[in-house]
Length: 80
Image (cartoon, rainbow, N blue to C red; front, top):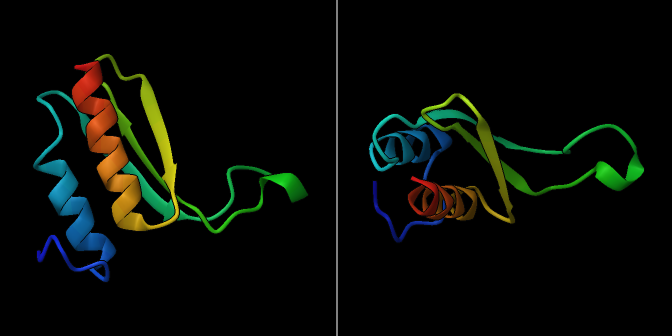
């Protein structure tokens, strides 16, 4: 994956994240869309989710898929 390419595919981003998460963490999802039902929850933001070794999930949002992955990795490193 070209890390400077903002058009990387979702599959490439998933693979990129899986191999950079701390030991015991697992990717759960990477999606674009709302965070729930209702007009205030509709969004074009990207949401990345992973589970901690305990199984407890974390969710992060960004305006791009790559931004969501970067934020997820940053959060996971801080929480490991």
